[in-house]
Image 1 (cartoon, rainbow, N blue to C red):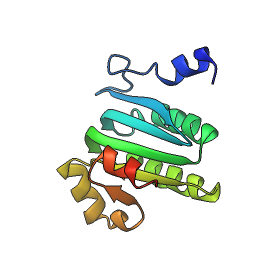
Image 2 (cartoon, rainbow, N blue to C red):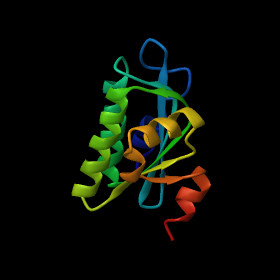
Image 3 (cartoon, rainbow, N blue to C red):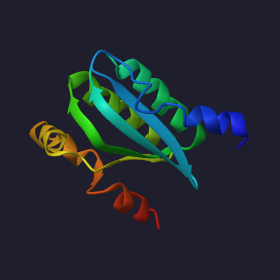
Image 4 (cartoon, one colour):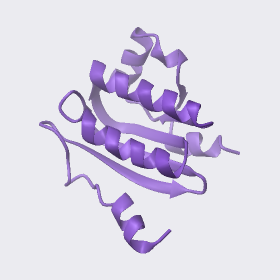
Length: 132
């Protein structure tokens, strides 16, 4: 990967947040998997920029691990985005794995019964280690 593309893929740090309450998504390639680390709130106001970042990840690999450890809230628009990315990755022969959900996000997935649709791991390390 050329240096400018690599720099672009890592440029979204916590200080470069989207939306009213803020969201950032950092991307990092680990072999043939892209790790996306989200921080902030995934809601109507910032789901568009997050979708752009995850679409960028899918361009490089249909295998994405999304670390949600620092995501404090997800609304219905955010859930729709996660399902859309999951389905797109699967259509391209890959997957979306969720890692390190905080208790509120975990409860939301349980309440909506969406936890059945996703492979969920307790930590980013466990999700990446499951790749074999």
